[in-house]
Length: 254
Image 1 (cartoon, rainbow, N blue to C red):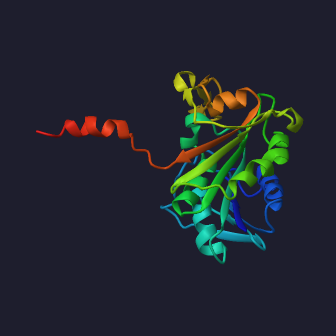
Image 2: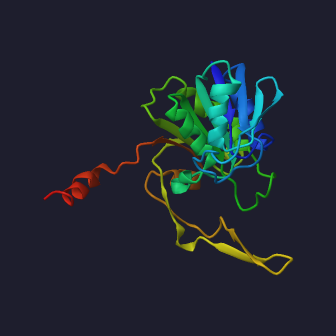
């Protein structure tokens, strides 16, 4: 089985090395194509206004001067001799829960794989307020990663779908198990914009990730993580709200 690894935290991110360890338990044919620098929050964006460059660091290990989506495209079309059987994105430093998946470069890399018809899974390590910078513990992800992935290797994936996995901020031995759950939703009313002043006296603004209210829903990824479980959530790329089709169409009929 040929596996392509990518992420949005960059080619040198600690979580990518954790993902390599996880993937090595599944295959010995592992390729890496990841952004050269951190691309957190890039979403499903493509680089269209400047050339993208790819660098080979070692056999089967490449970086791309672009987004996670660019990295998957370059990995499939330029770096690898043929398409992979599986794409793994992560392990992200931080949660990708609820509607945060729409911002996530980690999840978007898996979306690009799904669009290419390749089985794709995003993995993220949630951390508590004590985690700072690269001092985040990936204990749960490293210990549980292969256990989560193995049942998915031959599971049927519907077209244009992917799997989003989040590991709770716990030591590996404290994780309670695995739950297959739906996507939850955040309340962004309390999201913060932090204002500061640069040395030249001009204001700047930094979007804060704290202060966002989590609305726990029954059987959601937010609830699973809060209760100490690994969340496994199937996502689809079809964003059509079918229940509204007839209602909206009626507005245009005579």
